[in-house]
Image (tube, rainbow, N blue to C red; front, side, top):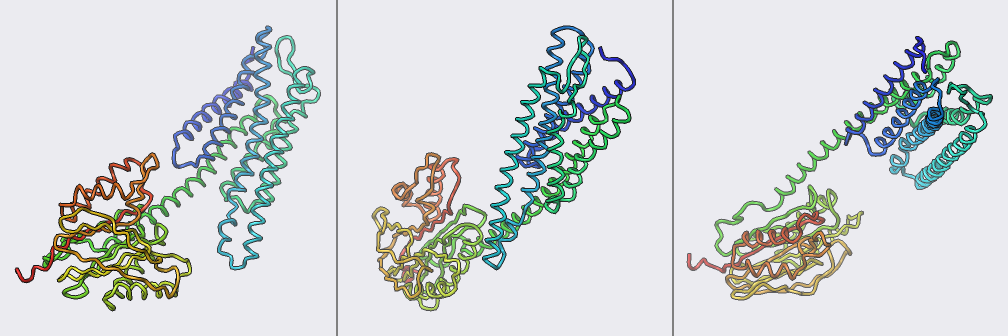
Length: 516
C-alpha cells in the first residue's frame, strides 16, 4: 500500500495535474478542426495519448505497489511493462517529430523552382531525393530500435534484469536497470544531432520547444539524483510536453492566420477579376432595344471564379451584326487573361475587316507571334447581314452550332472545322454561309454544355441539348437559355461543374424597316 509521505503526496499531485492537462490537450486538439493540419493533429493525438498512458500506468503502479497477492502481482507487472514500453514509444514519437519538422520545413524544393540555372534545379532535386531517402532510413532505424527494446523488455520480465517485485509487490530496480533507458538515450542523441545539424530548418518557436523537451528531462534526472523521493522526471516530461505543444501550435496558428489572410486576399482579387470579366462581356438585356430585326441573349457560368469561355456581339455598322462564341484552353486566371486578349483581338479585327475569314486569320497570326505558353482558343465567328439574313461564319475548332430555320426544328450544323486559333501561324480558314429567314434562330455554346457530367460520369451530350432546344424553340432567346440551364442542372444534379458553361441564342426576325 502506498505510504502517504510528503514525497508521494507531491508525486500524486504532479501526476494528477499531468493527467488532467494531457486530457484537456487531447480534447483541444480533437476539436481544433481546420486550425491544425491532419498530420500534426494525428501526431499530437498519438503523442499525448502516450504521455497520458505513461502517467496513468505510473500512477497505477504507485497505487498497487505494496499490496500483496497474485492478482495484484500480475496486474502490477502488466502496468509496469506498459509504463516502460510507452516511455520508449514517447521517445520514438518525439524523434519522428523532430525529423518530420525538419523535412516539412525544408522549403528549398519550392523556392528554388525559380532558379535560372538548370544545374541549380537539378542540384536542388538531388538534394530533395537524398533527404527523402534519409528520412525513410531514419524512420526504419527508429522502428528497429523500438522492436529491439520491446524484445529486451519482454525478456527482462523473467530474469529481473531491469526491475522486479518482491513478495509484497514492492518495486525494485534490477542489476541492469540503467540499460532499460539505453534506447531512449540513443533516441535522445539522435534528436540532439538533428536539432544541431538541421537547426536552420526549424522555426524559432519549434526549435525552442524541441530543445526544452530534450534538455528539461536531463536536468530533472540530475535534480532527482539529489532527491529521489519526488518524480522530477515525470514533472519535467509533462511540462516539456505542454511547452512543445504550445510552441508548435503557436507556429501553426501563425501560419494558419497568414494562409487565411492570403486566402482572403486571393478570394477578393478573384472576385474582382470575375466582376471585371463579367462586365467585359455583353450583359445588358435587351442588348439592342432600338433594333427590331433581331433579339439576342447570352450567358456564361464559369467553373471557377474566372473562366476561359467568352461570347460577344456587336454592330459593325447599321446593317451588320458580329457574333462570337469562343473557348480558351485551360482554366482559371491564365485562361481568363488569354480570353480577354482574344476577345479584344477578335472584336477589333472584325470591326476593321468586316469579314470573319480575314478577321480570324489576322487574330491567329497576332496570337501566334507572342504565345510562349502555347495556349489556343476555339472560335465561332459570324457576320450577319440584318437586311437580307445572310450569315457568313468561320468555325476555328469550335462546337457545331444549332440552327432552327423558320417553321422547322433545331438541328446541328456540321460544317467543316478549321484549326484552333493560336496553334500555327499563317493558317488559312474557310468560311461558310447560312441564309436566315425571318423567325430563324441560332444557338451557340461551348463544350461545357455537351460535356456536363452527372454523378454516374455520363455526359449531357448534344442529343439531350437538341431535345431541350426543340422543347423550348418557340420561346425568346432568354427563355431558351434558361430552359437549357434547367435541363443541364437537372441532369448533373449535385455533381461538381468541371467546365465553363457558355451559351448564346440569336433570334432573327427579319428587316422590319419598311413596316416601321
